[in-house]
Length: 494
Image 1 (cartoon, rainbow, N blue to C red):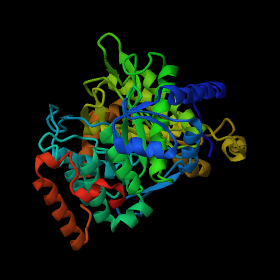
Image 2: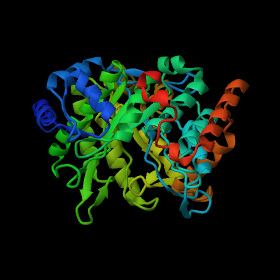
Image 3: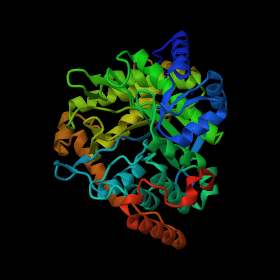
Image 4: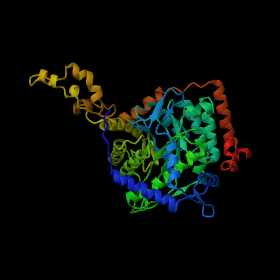
């Protein structure tokens, strides 16, 4: 299939960034707080300075790791009949961010998000046409930090046929998530064979591997779940102010994380990720809705292709605090760049205010925007059939094309037909209620939620999940960041 492709770097520039990253890894290295990770690097031949908690990686070790990583893999839904082929040339979409506030769909008021909103969001993603992966995209304020991860897996198991994802939240929470996922799908071997979990490994900037993230990385790798190595480097703050410098620094850091995953379990599916952008230099804050976010994402996609790795990036980002024109302009600019750059998985759905505010109607509009972006990426197909010379000769200048068989046969494939954007003439639009796209999106939210049917779960699986959920809820706070059992300090005992 023909695809329109945006490339912001020349082949020579890609190689210069790669060479710079290799020099950074070999001479500066990265800070690795987690002793177990340093030991793994040491055993693989990296240069480890325990006193400075620093690891320097030779280029040959990085190249070996890249050879181990699969170029593509399949991510499955809860019942394994739903599949996303990652790295095979298709663009996929997922939810975005961890908003702590939400615009209430019924009242229009901004309020703290709740666990009920998390469940609604999973149900809405389940009903989307183009967005196929929820990644704990709403952060509940009414659930203890120590149980959020278990409640999220419980909600996914009951309400989604699509894959699910969360962050690498440290040893014990990540182990909880993997065990609950395994319970839900039929065991660890089944989960390894057909991954359902999309793990977000946050990459610290500048040049850091955070212990909590490294712990989660190793556990997800042990369970065979794909890991998106995802820095959120900020040009001018936690990365060089130049986009090329940012790409070189984050490239080094991403490759270090990919290397650790392959050292621990060769063949672990990984994605080359980015959530990087520029700083708002007036205030020193993040500007995730900036057009430069799209440029960084497009550059990262080219680097990912250089390493034959699938890519995960952001799109549909905005700094707007309202469901307004700014939100539409910024999210379109960042999403289109990611789609045209060929990013394999784009997190894009339903957020405002630098991903800290959720809007359910915007999620529905983003789902439609994804469809439009995919149509743009397809470009224009030119062949004997699409040139339509015979039809043009038949119609000439004295008829029209509305009644032609060719029109009826081709228009659904050739034209993107939005479901939420009004296109009727003004009089018809006004007489039918003068509903805006946002009005239609709110109605779509209500329709999906009304039509949603929870998944049927085997009674034994339901009992096991409920027992584990209770176990997490009853666990003392002090164990949250500690190992649950003494024998689990040995990663081979997972």
